[in-house]
Image (cartoon, rainbow, N blue to C red; front, side, top):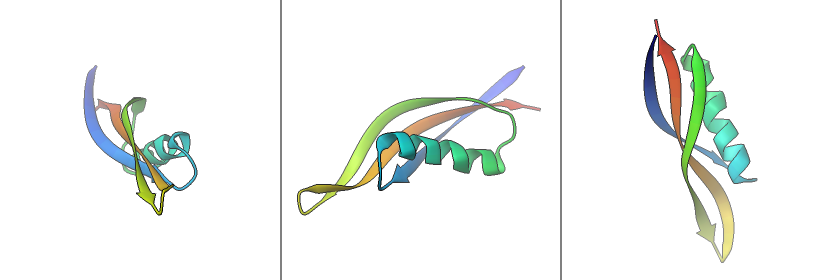
Length: 65
């Protein structure tokens, strides 16, 4: 088996968990055979002293056919 890894960033206005889920949900729309996700970092956008957007940097692993 050969595995390929791509890096994507998911975002959410609710939480970092939702941001990571958003990354996976978008990946599976165009990538078949997703095997796993490695969340490599979290960031956030702040406006007027409040977090307005959560971001999760993720590596998505999938099998190559």
